[in-house]
Amino acid sequence: MDIIMATVWIAMIFIPLFLSLSLMGYSVLPYIDKSQYANPSAFKVSVITSVVWILVSWFLIVPRLVGNLRAIGDAVVGVL
Image (cartoon, rainbow, N blue to C red):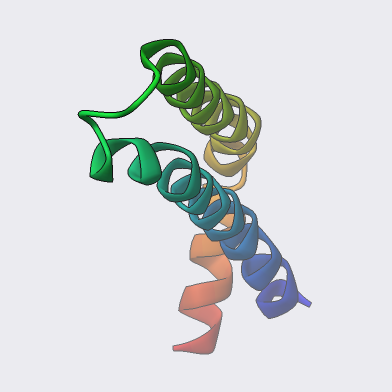
């Protein structure tokens, strides 16, 4: 059961990280590639959206992670 909980907590860290990176890539990179033609307001909105998504995902995940580091450590030590 501890292994399952550790897997869940690790997934809760990496899934928002991948989502935020993919959101940043899809919303910012097209404007960077065509920066000389980009609409400055659209670029600003995409950057703000990406940063807000990263902050929201990390502020929702990190406090839970810090509270459960001991459980994850116990599960890892139990496997070893």
